[in-house]
Length: 181
Image (cartoon, rainbow, N blue to C red; front, top):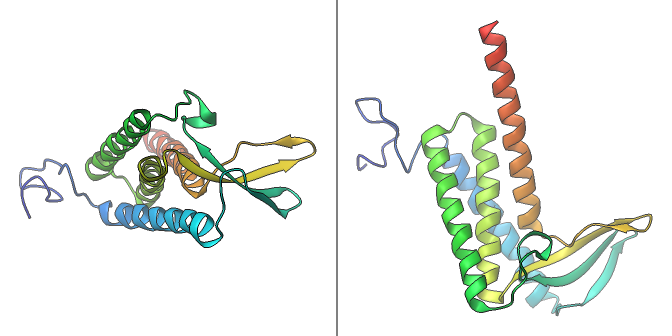
């Protein structure tokens, strides 16, 4: 392999593009992306859902097709293609930075899976922005008169990835505290 891609060079420097846990992170990202895009394709093409279509799946869960043209909670909403391309580009830049973080600093399987979930989810939502002009969201949880925002599989992956990173950092911090005692 080229020097910049090797897991570690002879002088002990870390690689920029491939590390010990990169394979696990890559597989997690690819599976997450495939599952997210397959679900969206099935909902839009397979079931023929159009924006605004909805049906109850369970007493606390509805399926509704909403296109989010902003960021989280439709913040900074804009349907312009320039804005969608900018957000898709931002998702790619963040994903590349997370990939470098994994390659250079990957500390274990939980970090690799967590970063893979975030990367796969971010790329999935970025693809939506380019192909659909916004992120396709489908799931609406509600109970006792309260409802949450509409989300998709990529969003679930991103949240799970962030939770995994937080857990991993707390465990690593705790382990460091125990070792220094």
